[in-house]
Each structure stands twice: as C-alpha cells, then as structure tokens.
Image (cartoon, rainbow, N blue to C red; front, side, top):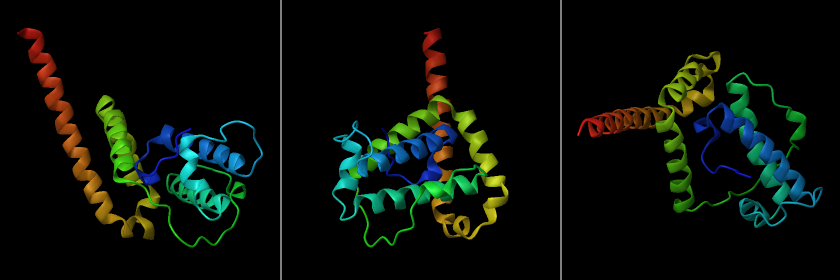
Length: 165
C-alpha cells in the first residue's frame, strides 16, 4: 500500500490509479471492513488523526480532483462529505523519499513521463482555477523536469562513453 504524501499532480497515470485504489482500501481498513493491512505503516498518519476516516476521505477527495483534471472517471460516491479541521504532518524525510522514488521513475522513463505531462498541460483543465493557483508549483516542477532530463542525458552520455573506455 502506497499513500503518497506528495500532491497527486506529480503522479503519472499508473501512480494516480494505484493511489486511488489503495486509498479506497485504506478507507475500508480504517472503517474496520477488512481483516488485513490493519497495522500497515502507511496508515499510521491517518490513525493518529482525530477522525481517521475523515482524513482518508479528504485524501481521496484530492486524488479525485486530480483525476477530474486529467479527464479520468473516478466514482465520487466512494468519498463521504466531511469537514476536516487540521492537517496531517509529514516529515521531510518522507517527502524526500517519495520525491527520490518519483525522480527515479522519471529518469528511467523520461520521454514517457514528459509525454504524459505535456498532455496534461495541454488539456482543457489546464486553465482551471486550481492550475492557475498552482502556477508556481508547476514552474518548479518544470524546472525539476528539465533538471532530471539533463541528468538523464548526462547519465546516458557517461554510460555510453564508459562502453568505449
């Protein structure tokens, strides 16, 4: 079970679909509707919250919003309406771990990731209020993508030149 702490906008298609499925599983675990996964480490932050089911519903809501931006059809009826007061804190170490994992996926498949990201940026939802509010985040992400693309190119050149040594 992987419940990302990073914003769902950074996930690729497979990551977003997986986090939706796994978030729904986490909700069932927190509701006591399953026997497995009760002590999974990814659930600790939700269990520690005053109302764990409300916390996972909030999490799922933001995954749902990202799915709408991309034109995916996720079932909104699986999320209960809530009023969440507070935030779940996440350590810098957790964020660094997740970012490193995503960057590795990006470096392994740079062109695929960029193609998917380009489609998202050119989609109809690119003009939504959320996208405009998040323009600074997108600019930072674009900088990261360019940095990762350059890193990928350097790694490729190094590995190619190492073959000739």
